[in-house]
Amino acid sequence: MQNQQTFRPCDLVIYGALGDLSTRKLIASLYRLEKAGLIEDDTQITGVDLHDKTSTEFIEIAQQSLQKFLNETLDPTVWKQFSARLAYLKIDLTKKQQYKKLASRVDAEKRDLINYFSVAPFLFKHICQGLNQSGILNKRSKVVVEKPLGHDLKSSQEINDAFAEVFNEDQIYRIDHYLGKETVLNLLALRFANSIFTSNWDHNTIDSIQITVSEEVGIEGRWGYFDHTGQTRDMLQNHLLQILTFIAMEPPVNLEAKSIRREKVKVLEALRPITASNVSKKTVRGQYTSGFLNGAAVPGYLEEEGANTESTNESFVAIRVDIDNWRWADVPFYLRTGKRMQSKRTEIVINFKQLPHNIFKDSFQDLPANKLVIHLQKQEGVEVHMLNKVPSLDGNIKLQKTKLDLSFSDSGKEKPVFGGYERLMLETMRSNPTLFLSREEIEQAWTWVDSIQDAWVHQNESPKPYPAGSWGPVASVALLARDGRNWEE
Ligand code: BG6
Image (tube, rainbow, N blue to C red):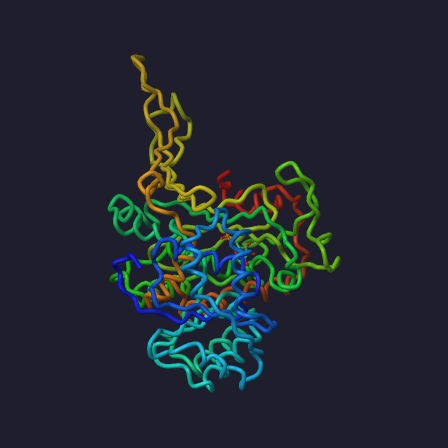
C-alpha cells in the first residue's frame, strides 16, 4: 500500500457476490483501488452467494467480469496481488446456521469486518440476524447497504429497525453512489471555499435553480424492479434530493459527517409538501413511447421485455420544489429526471436574477441574467454564463454573451479519475461516514416523497407519453412556462 493515509486492514465480505452490482461495479472498483495502491496489504475480500462455487471458480468469474467491465487490460502484477485476496463461501443467507462458515475466513479482531449487502432488500434482516448469531461481529464491524432502502417511509423504517437491532447507527454506511461523484463533492468546495459564490447564494441574487438528471438507458431487463419503483423512487428520492441538499444547505460547522448531515436534514425538513391540492400544478409524470436514440429505433416502455402493457408507472418526473426557509423563500427548484431521454446529462443550473435596470438596450432589450452551470456528467465542469463587450473601436458599447469556463478537469489531469464506488469503498475502509446517508435523511426524504406518491394515487392520471430520445413530455415545459421560465437546453 503506497498511500500515506492510514487505515486498518479489512475483511470485506460481499453478500450477493455473483450478482449484477458486484460483478459489474464492486469488483472493478476494488481492482482499481488495488492498482492505485490503496488497499491495505492484509485486506481480504470474500464473496458470498447461494451458488455452488469454489474460490478458484469465483476468481475466474472476477477475472471475466473485469475483462468485460473494466475498459482496460488487466495488469498481471496487479491482478496477481488482487486475486490473492479473493475467496468464496457458499451461504444460504436465509439460514442462520450457515453464517458460522464465515468464521473460517474472517477475523474481526485482526481486520475490520465490512459487510457489503449487495442483495435484494428482503435478505437484509436475515443477514443482520445471521451475523448477530454467528459471533463474528464486534464494535468496529460495519455494514454497507445500497438503495433501495425501502419503498416508502414505513418499509424503510422496517429496514432501518432491522439494522438497528444489530448495529449502531455509526456502523451503518448507506450508499447513494452520487455522493461518490467528484463533482457532487466539488459543490462543497465551490460553495464554501469561494466568497464570490457564498455571498451570492440566496433569494436576493438567485432567481431559480434547475437540476436535470437525464438518462439514455431504458429499463434494460430490470422491469421487475423498476415497474413497482418508478423514476421518482429510483432517482428523485435519493440522487436528485441529495444534489438538492448540497446546493441548498447552510454552511456546516466543519466537514464532519454529523455537521454535514445535520444541515442536509434541515433542508429536507423545509421542503414544502406536495399534496393532492397542488400536485397537478407542481409535478409532471411521464412514460416513454417508442422513438429514436442516437439514430437507432428503441421500444416504448410498454413494449420492453417482460412489460405489463397496462402499466401506469412513470419513467420521467419533473417537479417544482419550494424550500420554506429564510435563504430560499420564493426561489423555485425545478427537478427533472427520466429514462430514454435525448442524452445522458446531470446538470445543475443556478439562474441569477436580472439586473434592476438595463443600460445596454442597443444590444439586448432584456439583459440576459447570469447563470452558473455545473455539469456532473457526462463531462464534469463549471461555467458562468456572462455578458461582455464586443471588442471594437466603435463608439457604442455592444455586448455579447460569453461563457467563462471554470472547468477543473485540466487541473486534475495527472490524477486517475475514480468512479463513485471506488471513493465510497475507500471511505468505508477509512471509517469515514461523511459521504453516506443517515437514517434521518432517508426517512425525511421518504416522508416528502410519500406525500407526492399519495397525491398521484388520488389524482389517478396516467403518465404523459413522451417519445424516447426527447426531453420528456410537453407538460414538463409547461411546468416552467407557467412561471415564465424554461429549461436550460
Ligand atoms: C441508479 C438507478 O441508482 O442510478 C438506475 O437505480 C440509474 O436506474 C442509475 O440508471 C444512474 O446512475 P449514473 O451514475 O449512471 O447516473
